[in-house]
Image (cartoon, rainbow, N blue to C red):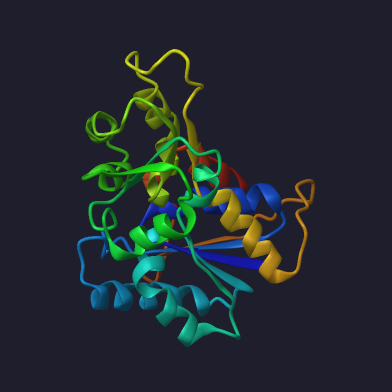
Length: 265
Protein backbone atom coordinates (compact mmCIF):
# COMPACT_ATOMS: atom_id res chain seq x y z
CA UNK A 1 0.00 0.00 0.00
CA UNK A 2 1.39 3.35 -1.08
CA UNK A 3 -0.03 6.66 0.14
CA UNK A 4 0.98 10.02 -1.31
CA UNK A 5 0.61 13.35 0.46
CA UNK A 6 0.94 16.79 -1.09
CA UNK A 7 1.28 20.34 0.20
CA UNK A 8 3.02 23.55 -0.77
CA UNK A 9 5.68 22.76 1.84
CA UNK A 10 6.23 20.82 5.04
CA UNK A 11 2.63 21.23 6.20
CA UNK A 12 2.13 17.66 5.00
CA UNK A 13 4.27 16.32 7.85
CA UNK A 14 1.51 16.03 10.51
CA UNK A 15 -0.77 13.99 8.24
CA UNK A 16 2.13 11.87 6.99
CA UNK A 17 3.19 11.13 10.58
CA UNK A 18 -0.42 10.26 11.47
CA UNK A 19 -0.56 7.82 8.55
CA UNK A 20 2.77 6.37 9.64
CA UNK A 21 1.45 5.77 13.16
CA UNK A 22 -1.74 4.10 11.93
CA UNK A 23 -0.06 2.06 9.18
CA UNK A 24 3.72 1.93 9.64
CA UNK A 25 3.81 -0.59 6.78
CA UNK A 26 2.54 1.94 4.23
CA UNK A 27 4.94 3.29 1.63
CA UNK A 28 4.84 7.08 1.61
CA UNK A 29 5.27 9.69 -1.10
CA UNK A 30 5.73 13.29 0.07
CA UNK A 31 5.21 15.79 -2.76
CA UNK A 32 5.72 19.50 -2.04
CA UNK A 33 6.44 22.64 -4.04
CA UNK A 34 9.42 24.55 -2.63
CA UNK A 35 9.73 26.46 -5.91
CA UNK A 36 6.20 27.82 -5.51
CA UNK A 37 5.70 28.11 -1.75
CA UNK A 38 3.71 29.85 -0.33
CA UNK A 39 0.49 29.14 -2.21
CA UNK A 40 -1.74 31.30 -0.01
CA UNK A 41 -1.07 34.70 -1.66
CA UNK A 42 -1.62 33.29 -5.18
CA UNK A 43 -4.81 33.51 -7.23
CA UNK A 44 -7.16 30.52 -7.32
CA UNK A 45 -6.04 29.75 -10.86
CA UNK A 46 -2.36 29.84 -9.88
CA UNK A 47 -2.95 27.73 -6.76
CA UNK A 48 -4.78 25.17 -8.87
CA UNK A 49 -1.95 25.03 -11.41
CA UNK A 50 0.68 24.49 -8.70
CA UNK A 51 -1.48 21.94 -6.91
CA UNK A 52 -2.09 19.97 -10.09
CA UNK A 53 1.63 19.90 -10.89
CA UNK A 54 2.45 18.73 -7.36
CA UNK A 55 -0.27 16.08 -7.51
CA UNK A 56 0.80 14.83 -10.94
CA UNK A 57 4.36 14.34 -9.71
CA UNK A 58 3.03 12.20 -6.87
CA UNK A 59 0.58 10.32 -9.11
CA UNK A 60 3.43 9.32 -11.42
CA UNK A 61 4.71 7.07 -8.62
CA UNK A 62 1.39 5.18 -8.69
CA UNK A 63 0.14 5.58 -5.12
CA UNK A 64 -3.13 4.02 -3.96
CA UNK A 65 -4.41 7.32 -2.56
CA UNK A 66 -3.48 11.00 -2.59
CA UNK A 67 -3.93 13.18 0.50
CA UNK A 68 -4.22 16.91 -0.12
CA UNK A 69 -2.61 17.82 3.20
CA UNK A 70 -3.10 21.53 2.65
CA UNK A 71 -6.04 23.73 3.57
CA UNK A 72 -5.33 26.25 0.81
CA UNK A 73 -5.20 23.59 -1.90
CA UNK A 74 -8.31 21.92 -0.50
CA UNK A 75 -10.20 25.23 -0.64
CA UNK A 76 -9.14 26.26 -4.13
CA UNK A 77 -8.08 23.15 -6.06
CA UNK A 78 -9.73 20.04 -4.62
CA UNK A 79 -12.45 19.93 -7.28
CA UNK A 80 -9.88 20.20 -10.07
CA UNK A 81 -7.67 17.52 -8.48
CA UNK A 82 -10.58 15.12 -8.16
CA UNK A 83 -11.80 15.85 -11.68
CA UNK A 84 -8.41 14.89 -13.10
CA UNK A 85 -7.36 12.01 -10.85
CA UNK A 86 -10.49 10.23 -9.62
CA UNK A 87 -11.79 7.57 -9.74
CA UNK A 88 -8.46 5.91 -10.57
CA UNK A 89 -6.75 7.65 -7.64
CA UNK A 90 -8.78 8.52 -4.52
CA UNK A 91 -8.14 12.12 -3.44
CA UNK A 92 -8.67 13.04 0.22
CA UNK A 93 -8.93 16.72 1.15
CA UNK A 94 -8.31 18.56 4.41
CA UNK A 95 -11.07 20.43 6.24
CA UNK A 96 -10.52 22.49 9.42
CA UNK A 97 -11.85 20.63 12.48
CA UNK A 98 -14.59 23.15 13.23
CA UNK A 99 -17.30 20.57 13.91
CA UNK A 100 -15.55 18.72 16.78
CA UNK A 101 -14.22 21.98 18.21
CA UNK A 102 -17.72 23.50 18.33
CA UNK A 103 -19.44 20.36 19.63
CA UNK A 104 -19.09 21.44 23.26
CA UNK A 105 -20.29 24.96 22.57
CA UNK A 106 -18.62 27.90 24.27
CA UNK A 107 -16.06 30.12 22.58
CA UNK A 108 -13.98 28.77 19.69
CA UNK A 109 -11.17 30.44 17.76
CA UNK A 110 -10.12 29.44 14.25
CA UNK A 111 -6.49 30.25 13.50
CA UNK A 112 -5.92 30.39 9.74
CA UNK A 113 -3.93 32.20 7.08
CA UNK A 114 -5.11 35.73 6.24
CA UNK A 115 -6.36 34.48 2.86
CA UNK A 116 -8.57 31.85 4.49
CA UNK A 117 -9.76 33.99 7.41
CA UNK A 118 -13.08 35.55 6.49
CA UNK A 119 -13.26 33.63 3.21
CA UNK A 120 -16.65 32.39 1.93
CA UNK A 121 -15.33 28.83 2.37
CA UNK A 122 -14.52 29.26 6.05
CA UNK A 123 -17.72 31.21 6.69
CA UNK A 124 -19.72 28.31 5.19
CA UNK A 125 -17.96 25.83 7.45
CA UNK A 126 -18.77 27.99 10.48
CA UNK A 127 -22.41 28.28 9.40
CA UNK A 128 -22.70 24.53 8.75
CA UNK A 129 -20.74 23.17 11.71
CA UNK A 130 -20.30 25.96 14.24
CA UNK A 131 -23.55 25.18 16.03
CA UNK A 132 -24.10 27.32 19.11
CA UNK A 133 -20.41 28.04 19.60
CA UNK A 134 -19.18 31.63 19.60
CA UNK A 135 -16.62 31.52 16.80
CA UNK A 136 -13.80 34.04 16.37
CA UNK A 137 -11.72 34.00 13.18
CA UNK A 138 -8.07 34.79 13.90
CA UNK A 139 -5.72 35.64 11.02
CA UNK A 140 -2.13 34.47 11.48
CA UNK A 141 0.06 36.44 9.06
CA UNK A 142 3.53 34.99 8.67
CA UNK A 143 2.98 31.92 10.83
CA UNK A 144 2.93 29.30 8.06
CA UNK A 145 6.02 30.83 6.44
CA UNK A 146 7.86 30.89 9.78
CA UNK A 147 7.00 27.23 10.38
CA UNK A 148 8.06 26.35 6.83
CA UNK A 149 11.52 27.76 7.48
CA UNK A 150 11.74 26.50 11.09
CA UNK A 151 12.39 30.09 12.19
CA UNK A 152 11.71 29.84 15.90
CA UNK A 153 11.80 33.58 16.62
CA UNK A 154 9.39 34.32 13.76
CA UNK A 155 7.10 31.50 14.91
CA UNK A 156 6.99 32.92 18.43
CA UNK A 157 6.25 36.43 17.14
CA UNK A 158 3.45 35.25 14.83
CA UNK A 159 1.94 33.03 17.54
CA UNK A 160 2.03 35.88 20.06
CA UNK A 161 0.31 38.22 17.60
CA UNK A 162 -2.45 35.68 16.92
CA UNK A 163 -2.85 34.89 20.62
CA UNK A 164 -3.41 38.60 21.28
CA UNK A 165 -6.41 38.44 18.93
CA UNK A 166 -7.79 35.31 20.59
CA UNK A 167 -10.43 35.82 23.31
CA UNK A 168 -9.26 34.77 26.79
CA UNK A 169 -12.33 32.58 27.30
CA UNK A 170 -11.94 30.27 24.29
CA UNK A 171 -12.50 26.60 25.01
CA UNK A 172 -10.95 25.40 21.76
CA UNK A 173 -8.64 26.56 18.98
CA UNK A 174 -8.99 25.12 15.49
CA UNK A 175 -5.67 24.89 13.65
CA UNK A 176 -6.87 25.93 10.21
CA UNK A 177 -3.54 25.47 8.41
CA UNK A 178 -1.67 22.18 8.36
CA UNK A 179 1.62 23.94 9.10
CA UNK A 180 0.26 25.10 12.47
CA UNK A 181 0.04 21.55 13.81
CA UNK A 182 3.84 21.42 13.80
CA UNK A 183 3.95 24.12 16.50
CA UNK A 184 0.82 23.10 18.39
CA UNK A 185 2.47 23.18 21.80
CA UNK A 186 3.73 26.72 21.26
CA UNK A 187 0.19 27.73 20.32
CA UNK A 188 -1.25 25.99 23.37
CA UNK A 189 1.16 27.80 25.68
CA UNK A 190 0.38 31.16 24.08
CA UNK A 191 -3.39 30.91 24.45
CA UNK A 192 -3.26 29.47 27.98
CA UNK A 193 -2.51 32.96 29.32
CA UNK A 194 -2.56 34.28 32.91
CA UNK A 195 -5.54 36.43 31.88
CA UNK A 196 -7.59 33.33 31.21
CA UNK A 197 -10.40 32.88 33.79
CA UNK A 198 -9.36 30.23 36.34
CA UNK A 199 -12.77 28.58 36.17
CA UNK A 200 -12.20 27.53 32.56
CA UNK A 201 -10.55 24.22 31.58
CA UNK A 202 -7.41 24.07 29.48
CA UNK A 203 -7.75 25.12 25.86
CA UNK A 204 -8.21 22.22 23.45
CA UNK A 205 -6.43 22.30 20.10
CA UNK A 206 -8.09 20.71 17.07
CA UNK A 207 -5.95 19.77 14.08
CA UNK A 208 -6.90 17.74 11.03
CA UNK A 209 -4.04 15.25 10.67
CA UNK A 210 -5.54 12.35 12.62
CA UNK A 211 -8.94 12.63 10.95
CA UNK A 212 -7.36 12.89 7.50
CA UNK A 213 -5.23 9.81 8.10
CA UNK A 214 -8.23 7.82 9.33
CA UNK A 215 -10.32 8.94 6.34
CA UNK A 216 -7.54 7.86 3.98
CA UNK A 217 -7.58 4.34 5.39
CA UNK A 218 -11.38 4.26 5.11
CA UNK A 219 -11.18 5.28 1.45
CA UNK A 220 -8.70 2.47 0.87
CA UNK A 221 -10.85 -0.03 2.76
CA UNK A 222 -8.11 -0.95 5.23
CA UNK A 223 -7.94 -0.90 9.02
CA UNK A 224 -5.30 0.64 11.25
CA UNK A 225 -2.44 -1.72 12.05
CA UNK A 226 -0.08 0.25 14.29
CA UNK A 227 2.00 -2.84 15.10
CA UNK A 228 2.65 -3.75 11.45
CA UNK A 229 6.25 -4.11 10.30
CA UNK A 230 7.44 -0.62 9.34
CA UNK A 231 8.17 0.15 5.71
CA UNK A 232 11.34 2.02 4.81
CA UNK A 233 9.88 3.26 1.50
CA UNK A 234 9.77 7.06 1.52
CA UNK A 235 9.85 9.06 -1.71
CA UNK A 236 10.30 12.83 -1.43
CA UNK A 237 9.45 15.05 -4.40
CA UNK A 238 10.44 18.72 -4.36
CA UNK A 239 8.58 20.56 -7.14
CA UNK A 240 8.62 17.26 -9.01
CA UNK A 241 12.29 16.47 -8.39
CA UNK A 242 13.35 13.54 -6.18
CA UNK A 243 15.24 14.75 -3.14
CA UNK A 244 15.74 14.43 0.62
CA UNK A 245 13.43 15.61 3.35
CA UNK A 246 13.98 19.38 3.66
CA UNK A 247 16.31 20.31 6.51
CA UNK A 248 13.52 22.33 8.13
CA UNK A 249 11.41 19.17 8.42
CA UNK A 250 13.92 17.73 10.87
CA UNK A 251 13.24 20.59 13.29
CA UNK A 252 9.90 18.95 14.09
CA UNK A 253 9.06 15.64 15.75
CA UNK A 254 6.89 14.60 12.79
CA UNK A 255 9.76 15.10 10.36
CA UNK A 256 12.17 13.17 12.55
CA UNK A 257 9.69 10.31 12.81
CA UNK A 258 9.52 10.02 9.04
CA UNK A 259 13.27 10.40 8.63
CA UNK A 260 13.91 7.61 11.14
CA UNK A 261 11.88 5.21 9.02
CA UNK A 262 13.58 6.16 5.75
CA UNK A 263 16.47 4.19 4.31
CA UNK A 264 19.94 5.62 4.92
CA UNK A 265 21.45 7.57 2.04
